[in-house]
Image (cartoon, rainbow, N blue to C red):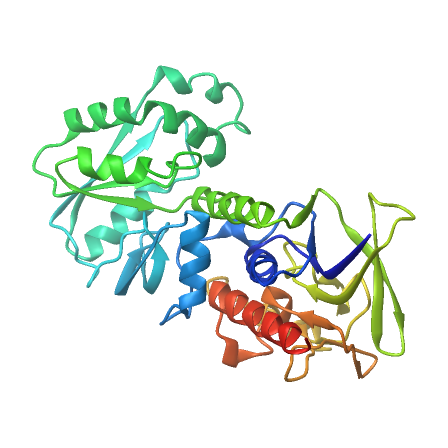
Length: 375
């Protein structure tokens, strides 16, 4: 199977790269094992103080609605974080004290939404907060198993019964000027969060839950649909196992499902993610890249990998592939001329690209521009 470019990884970076290349008439394939950082996506694009016009174009064509404002957002543990470019259903405030009284609504049996922490965080900002639980018959079948009472399963139900939820919340409202809800709306129908905001006589704030992230999964589905509409080949549930290299050039990839049928291409993009998605692997004494054995920037002293303060930034999250100015990764000190590393597999080795989703987007565009400049 021959393509212009083969991309390993179907997360934000891989999909942005694939869509961009398809829009330029290049044939691409994406190999996705299924799990990626979008499953943890907060809905805010970190370090994106300005959104490039081509990113907004991609989002618009994919049906992804975003907004921009310098401010803060309410986090799942009741803290506030500076934010700017975000999905439309993420509320941004000029300051943490965004209301006087807030009603926090959760659903009976749902433990991945930390109502008490959020209430404590709001009270520290001078916001009077109270918590109420809704018991909905439509969710009783999910409560039979804790594994079913997760955000995605709940979201599939909520998109059908959101009007009933609004009615129940109306009965609970007193003089509250804000309603805090878990982010379990709009998985299939992206209009639901907006409709809920219009239907309630108070400011509605959707707050993150434990993964999987409903807005993250929705974003992935929208980008994947757009990619496939453009003619891209999305190999879901497959995994790249190895590569054929010769004199600093990658010729093909071997995947688990294709067996003896190799993926050949002129260019290869590695968007395999970090530790969560197994783009990087750690052992008791080393960190390595599992597909090709690319050079990784890390510390040899394991004791320096982590900070005993659980809430602190963990040093191992900075580990990533060694790359040159064009994002070509190195193997045994030699740059691979037709491979590009993008997204979280870089760790924080390229701080000029930003962090999180911002780094994924910037590195994807940088790799795409390098590939297109070869023509």
